[in-house]
Image (cartoon, rainbow, N blue to C red; front, side, top):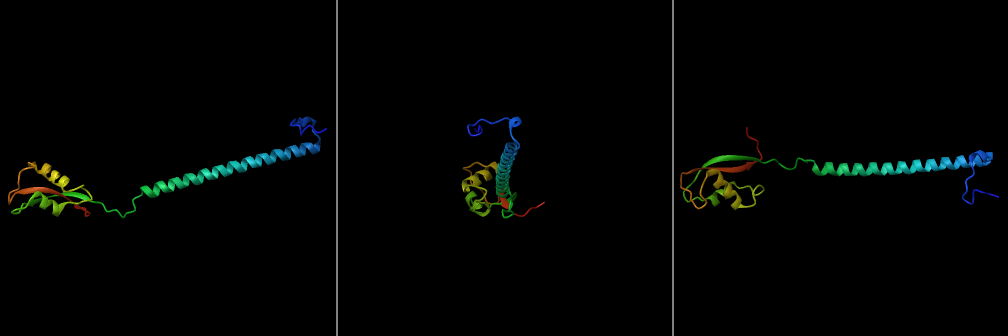
Length: 136
């Protein structure tokens, strides 16, 4: 009569030497299997974490390809017949402004001009411009 097959586990105190060796061997195999599974899971987690970290670093890192643009202001003299729109054509950087209207609005604001007021020849105004060169 084998009691192990019915799901009943015999106490180690009542096992024969052969049964005890087989029981200990099964226990070792189960521990080894658990250790292997845990090692595999830990390795997968480490690989996943490394992949996410690498992706985060490479996407947020500045590759140096993007040039820095510095904003400067210059004083210009308005020429005869020149408008704010003509000045915007010369100094606007479309990477920094959505359009000429936004640039002209900034020039009007900087110089405290009325939007309807026309410029006079010889008038001095300040206009912004962008450059990749750093000037001290």
